Length: 201
Ligand code: MLT
Image (cartoon, rainbow, N blue to C red):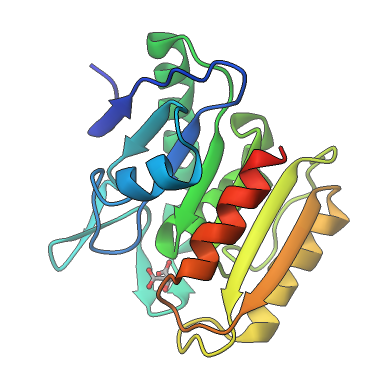
């Protein structure tokens, strides 16, 4: 048995990396399966459930309040999730996945890029924010990252998302950061941009 409750959808597409689906606060392993099938038809999908509960709502790490993270817990959970990715890759015979994370799931994906870069082949970060105040040095060697922010997002200030793009670029990631006319929720434009970007990987 693997370390996280999860869903696995085997793909027919063996040319492209699998997607690691990471849900937002209050979601679960079922939430992003439909989105994954829409943006990357035929790819294998690995979708773990976050192990932290906040008033019954699953998340990937603890927070002290909205936008204020328990960084010690975040580091521990990121390491745990990197372990799950290795277990799942072995169990299902897959290479390193591209993360597709929304909100809290985007934030743990960003933490994985900074703390365990070998765990991911790349990442789509939907409404992410800066996960760590002082991230360690890392070598991202051109890893592809798409960040999609919302111009009217009440949870993520524009400067915070911009700082994450800067931190990833400084470490050598190949970052495309777009700000969409949207709030924190996803729109058709997120689906279209993600699909087009993944097709070009
Ligand atoms: C977080 O806690 O990761 C962010 O505030 C996003 C959220 O889950 O609402």
